[in-house]
Image (cartoon, rainbow, N blue to C red; front, side, top):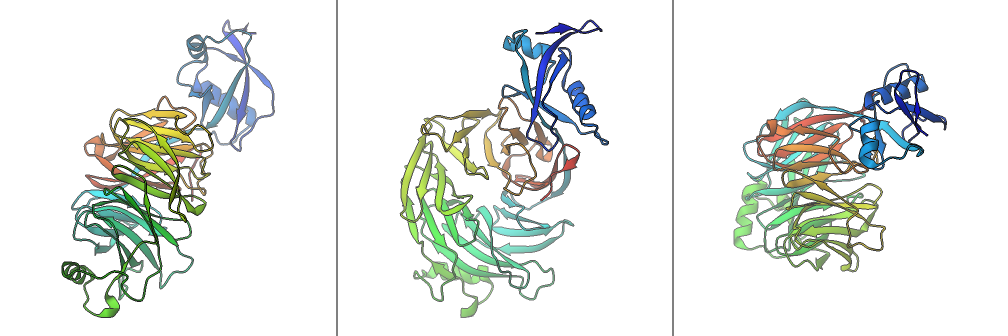
Length: 444
């Protein structure tokens, strides 16, 4: 029951819970209804006897507290005798812009997956590699047409400090390229293979967690499933025009430098319109997900090439897709300015479990990896209004934090998030931001 404190303010019974490392013993508190986030955070810090203050946010019935408890209770019709359960978690500190890396053309894809480096793909057909000192150490003319996607192919083995990257382009192909991380390498990069299947521009390319398989998505409604083995001979005959293109891009004329032409292991057919994104399950290279302009999210058994489930969301052409690290949730951005959230464990896959509404089209999104220090389910979205937004998926009414790329004057086309580092790519090139939580910055 609410009571009147000595100071004349009305109090309400509250129990605090948390999934963070900073847990309180189970007990009931009488909290003044006039209190807001700041006073509640002070109480938690005092009750925990923390030597260094940690800011906390508070979650009530799936909504982050933005007003006083009394205002929230009036809006929700909270009864006087109802004990209120409040979950607290470490606040997200204001994102900090670390650096800007200009490009000559729009950046369609960015990856922060190479330690101490940023990998980009641009509309001028080039893959570029930057180190943390902002120095561009590689500029690779990978394709003769705009690039749409780039990813790092994980490997247990590294040859002379190099990595393999996969790229997708409007030139109807994808490529595998070995890139040296050594600034003064005698062989800075080598085109290993080109992937041939699609008859329309490619939308995306992604690798499984082992680096043994790839998925390509295309405007031709198809998804290609590929292994990453480099064949000793071409698996498909090159046309004369393709030979000229590869000779120019590869920079060499010897047979040893000739990128091998690969064919897919399987072709996944079910989409009825452009496929925007295809990616593997975080834990399996035999299970995949895709989304497209046919307003569907599809689940695949990659080995058999069969679409095992389809989520239909009418009139929501989809632009990008992400799967949470635990594999339980899918998120898809669409042209109707929303991000739809789906519980992949639910028997009713046709219904969304939530929607994140944006003022402008969300072009891209990313979930933190399993190694993230984030203690709450979070995602970052990038939109055509030039704003990247950090969301807590337990509170869908508004973003926890937002930051403007290029001061909000240019479209965001790609976003990646690893540890403390967020890279956003778009019309202005690349911006790198730091996202922190509580008294610390998220670490790898």
